[in-house]
Length: 162
Image (cartoon, rainbow, N blue to C red; front, top):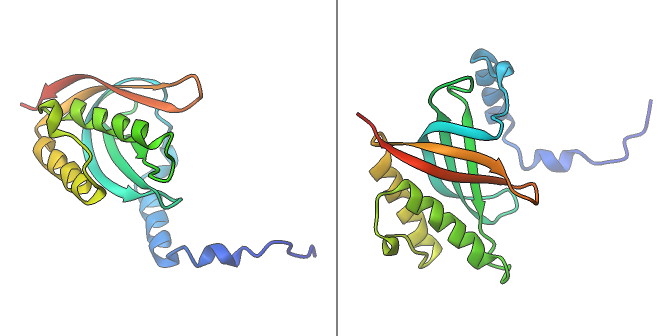
Protein backbone atom coordinates (compact mmCIF):
# COMPACT_ATOMS: atom_id res chain seq x y z
CA UNK A 1 0.00 0.00 0.00
CA UNK A 2 1.39 3.43 -0.95
CA UNK A 3 2.12 5.86 1.83
CA UNK A 4 -0.08 8.98 1.80
CA UNK A 5 2.13 11.99 1.02
CA UNK A 6 -0.43 14.78 1.33
CA UNK A 7 -2.77 15.72 4.17
CA UNK A 8 -6.11 15.94 2.34
CA UNK A 9 -8.00 16.39 5.61
CA UNK A 10 -7.09 20.08 5.60
CA UNK A 11 -9.69 20.56 2.84
CA UNK A 12 -12.36 18.88 4.95
CA UNK A 13 -12.32 21.84 7.37
CA UNK A 14 -13.66 24.05 4.57
CA UNK A 15 -16.41 21.71 3.39
CA UNK A 16 -19.88 21.23 4.83
CA UNK A 17 -20.05 17.51 4.06
CA UNK A 18 -23.79 17.19 4.78
CA UNK A 19 -24.64 20.12 2.48
CA UNK A 20 -22.37 18.69 -0.21
CA UNK A 21 -24.07 15.30 0.00
CA UNK A 22 -27.47 16.99 -0.40
CA UNK A 23 -26.20 18.95 -3.43
CA UNK A 24 -24.87 15.78 -5.05
CA UNK A 25 -28.16 13.99 -4.38
CA UNK A 26 -30.12 16.85 -5.96
CA UNK A 27 -27.93 16.81 -9.08
CA UNK A 28 -28.32 13.04 -9.40
CA UNK A 29 -32.11 13.23 -9.02
CA UNK A 30 -32.46 16.12 -11.49
CA UNK A 31 -30.33 14.70 -14.29
CA UNK A 32 -27.15 16.66 -13.64
CA UNK A 33 -25.26 14.00 -15.55
CA UNK A 34 -26.63 15.45 -18.81
CA UNK A 35 -25.03 18.85 -18.13
CA UNK A 36 -23.07 20.34 -21.01
CA UNK A 37 -20.94 23.46 -20.81
CA UNK A 38 -22.59 26.31 -22.67
CA UNK A 39 -20.16 27.17 -25.50
CA UNK A 40 -19.44 30.56 -27.01
CA UNK A 41 -22.44 32.00 -28.81
CA UNK A 42 -25.54 34.13 -28.45
CA UNK A 43 -28.27 33.09 -26.04
CA UNK A 44 -31.63 34.43 -24.95
CA UNK A 45 -31.38 34.56 -21.17
CA UNK A 46 -33.05 35.79 -18.01
CA UNK A 47 -31.22 36.74 -14.83
CA UNK A 48 -31.93 34.10 -12.21
CA UNK A 49 -29.64 35.33 -9.45
CA UNK A 50 -27.48 38.39 -8.94
CA UNK A 51 -25.57 39.39 -5.83
CA UNK A 52 -22.26 40.47 -4.37
CA UNK A 53 -20.50 37.44 -2.90
CA UNK A 54 -17.04 36.47 -1.76
CA UNK A 55 -14.88 34.55 -4.25
CA UNK A 56 -13.07 31.38 -3.26
CA UNK A 57 -9.96 33.49 -2.72
CA UNK A 58 -11.85 35.90 -0.46
CA UNK A 59 -12.29 38.78 -2.93
CA UNK A 60 -15.60 40.59 -3.49
CA UNK A 61 -17.32 39.31 -6.63
CA UNK A 62 -20.42 40.28 -8.60
CA UNK A 63 -22.07 37.01 -9.55
CA UNK A 64 -24.89 36.75 -12.07
CA UNK A 65 -26.62 33.51 -12.99
CA UNK A 66 -28.13 33.69 -16.45
CA UNK A 67 -30.71 31.04 -17.31
CA UNK A 68 -30.75 30.05 -21.00
CA UNK A 69 -34.36 30.30 -22.19
CA UNK A 70 -34.38 28.39 -25.47
CA UNK A 71 -32.42 26.25 -27.87
CA UNK A 72 -30.11 23.30 -27.28
CA UNK A 73 -28.94 24.70 -23.94
CA UNK A 74 -32.38 25.66 -22.58
CA UNK A 75 -32.38 25.49 -18.80
CA UNK A 76 -28.57 25.62 -18.55
CA UNK A 77 -26.79 28.37 -16.64
CA UNK A 78 -24.21 30.88 -17.80
CA UNK A 79 -22.26 32.34 -14.90
CA UNK A 80 -20.83 35.86 -14.89
CA UNK A 81 -18.32 36.24 -12.05
CA UNK A 82 -16.82 39.71 -11.85
CA UNK A 83 -14.09 39.51 -9.23
CA UNK A 84 -12.87 42.79 -7.70
CA UNK A 85 -9.49 42.95 -6.02
CA UNK A 86 -9.21 46.16 -3.98
CA UNK A 87 -5.62 45.22 -3.07
CA UNK A 88 -4.65 45.27 -6.78
CA UNK A 89 -4.15 48.96 -7.61
CA UNK A 90 -3.63 48.23 -11.31
CA UNK A 91 -6.75 46.11 -11.86
CA UNK A 92 -9.34 47.24 -9.29
CA UNK A 93 -10.61 50.24 -11.30
CA UNK A 94 -10.99 48.14 -14.45
CA UNK A 95 -12.75 45.36 -12.53
CA UNK A 96 -15.29 47.75 -11.01
CA UNK A 97 -15.80 49.46 -14.38
CA UNK A 98 -16.49 46.10 -16.08
CA UNK A 99 -19.07 45.21 -13.43
CA UNK A 100 -20.66 48.66 -13.66
CA UNK A 101 -20.99 48.25 -17.43
CA UNK A 102 -22.71 44.88 -16.98
CA UNK A 103 -25.15 46.35 -14.45
CA UNK A 104 -25.93 49.28 -16.76
CA UNK A 105 -26.55 46.91 -19.66
CA UNK A 106 -29.01 44.88 -17.58
CA UNK A 107 -30.87 47.81 -16.03
CA UNK A 108 -32.73 50.65 -17.75
CA UNK A 109 -31.03 53.49 -15.90
CA UNK A 110 -29.07 56.69 -16.17
CA UNK A 111 -25.29 56.30 -16.31
CA UNK A 112 -24.85 57.84 -12.83
CA UNK A 113 -27.34 55.40 -11.27
CA UNK A 114 -24.61 52.74 -11.29
CA UNK A 115 -21.49 53.75 -9.43
CA UNK A 116 -19.22 52.29 -6.81
CA UNK A 117 -19.23 54.20 -3.51
CA UNK A 118 -18.24 51.31 -1.24
CA UNK A 119 -18.93 47.60 -1.03
CA UNK A 120 -21.95 47.81 1.30
CA UNK A 121 -23.64 50.31 -1.03
CA UNK A 122 -22.62 48.28 -4.08
CA UNK A 123 -24.19 45.13 -2.60
CA UNK A 124 -27.44 47.07 -2.04
CA UNK A 125 -27.29 48.47 -5.59
CA UNK A 126 -26.90 44.98 -7.05
CA UNK A 127 -29.90 43.71 -5.07
CA UNK A 128 -31.94 46.75 -6.19
CA UNK A 129 -31.05 46.15 -9.84
CA UNK A 130 -32.02 42.49 -9.58
CA UNK A 131 -35.31 43.33 -7.87
CA UNK A 132 -36.12 45.85 -10.61
CA UNK A 133 -35.38 43.51 -13.56
CA UNK A 134 -36.53 40.19 -12.08
CA UNK A 135 -39.35 38.82 -14.25
CA UNK A 136 -39.44 42.06 -16.24
CA UNK A 137 -36.55 41.79 -18.68
CA UNK A 138 -34.79 39.16 -20.76
CA UNK A 139 -31.61 39.55 -22.78
CA UNK A 140 -29.67 38.45 -25.81
CA UNK A 141 -26.30 37.60 -24.27
CA UNK A 142 -23.17 36.95 -26.27
CA UNK A 143 -20.66 34.68 -24.55
CA UNK A 144 -17.17 34.74 -26.03
CA UNK A 145 -13.53 34.40 -25.02
CA UNK A 146 -11.03 37.26 -25.16
CA UNK A 147 -7.42 37.11 -26.44
CA UNK A 148 -6.17 36.01 -23.02
CA UNK A 149 -8.67 33.14 -22.80
CA UNK A 150 -11.04 34.80 -20.31
CA UNK A 151 -14.80 34.53 -20.73
CA UNK A 152 -16.41 37.71 -21.98
CA UNK A 153 -20.11 38.59 -21.77
CA UNK A 154 -22.00 41.27 -23.65
CA UNK A 155 -25.68 42.16 -23.51
CA UNK A 156 -26.67 42.75 -27.13
CA UNK A 157 -30.41 43.30 -26.72
CA UNK A 158 -32.92 43.81 -23.94
CA UNK A 159 -36.48 42.44 -24.19
CA UNK A 160 -39.46 43.26 -21.99
CA UNK A 161 -41.25 40.18 -20.69
CA UNK A 162 -44.84 40.15 -21.92
